[in-house]
Length: 140
Image (tube, rainbow, N blue to C red; front, side, top):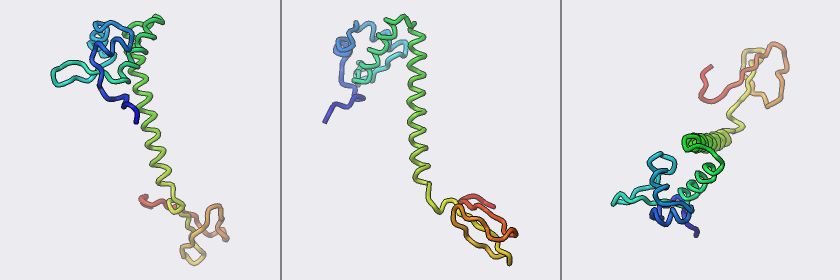
């Protein structure tokens, strides 16, 4: 079993060493909201592996000349994209669960006013038949 990358286990000195930064830089990034570690009961910061990876990304972007405000905005947008991707996956899974051959039934009115069920792709025999698509939960 591997380490949970979200588990806050590193104190600031260890996280700073892993990210190849000075601990004061980590404090500054926390104040700016770039990387916000968890807090232990005594108010000391605890960093997860995800936090350390984020610190490395902040450092990379900073070395490429991106301002701290620009980095904050990039991280914010990346978080939004990740959240939206999770939502799309949830909705896709829900949609696939709801896709049932009985979800959309096709009915036609017969010549005597009777209701006949049609298979998908089947057309009514007589022109006088009206086709109605019924979906559960929708009122006619």
